[in-house]
Length: 251
Ligand SMILES: C[S@@+](CC[C@H](N)C(=O)[O-])C[C@H]1O[C@@H](n2cnc3c(N)ncnc32)[C@H](O)[C@@H]1O
Image (cartoon, rainbow, N blue to C red; front, top):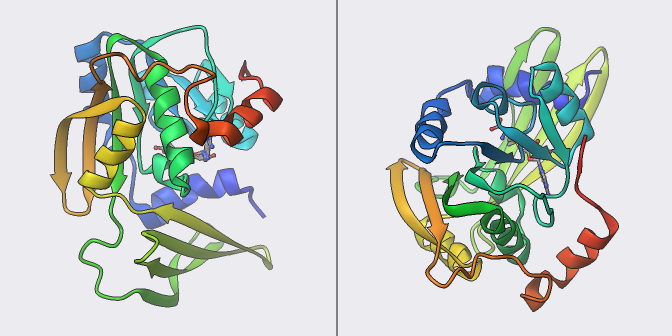
């Protein structure tokens, strides 16, 4: 059976329908800020390659596929706690990746770390989705989402409104094998995102709303509180412990 990283590209193509729709937004931001670009949670390099960005991801298999796609500079690190020598006019956090950090303190730690890697006047570009906005049902049972190239994917969805968490249950089948996993996503609307950004020393500068989705640009708040210091928030104690264990390195 193909690896989860290989199936990520398959799922983008056959279920999510996400190819390069968001590329123009990040290219325009990169042109405006002058680059270079750091992409957090870069995955298999869908955007990293065309942006010629530095890609950071926690998953070694994702990074291998990103390298195969032509990405030249890759870092294996946790986006909640990384430290690179370089600063960037644009840090990108595309396609709901922030929402994989269901724990609020983790999301703040990631945003704070992103802010600390901005060059003076730099911007953070990100996309978030409120999966519960306008949702009619809070439980959608297992159904076939796609079958192609010898792979089939069944998925189910559970919205926990009180926690603002949506869980996507997946069952992939290929070559007579099955793999089941669960993706937990923190739902974010504009005011929830603003709250996280504020805690991280950032502020919303631009927002484009498209249905459940928000495409946002954030900047460091006056006072430079986005600067990351090891002593800063008690909230990221766990994050700092992780940082000690894991040194960001160019893969
Ligand atoms: C939805 S994919 C996005 C990939 C890519 N940015 C895109 O737009 O196609 C999410 C990525 O986040 C990565 N990821 C999840 N948690 C992470 C963490 N704590 N630090 C760094 N990467 C993480 C996963 O390995 C995965 O590649």
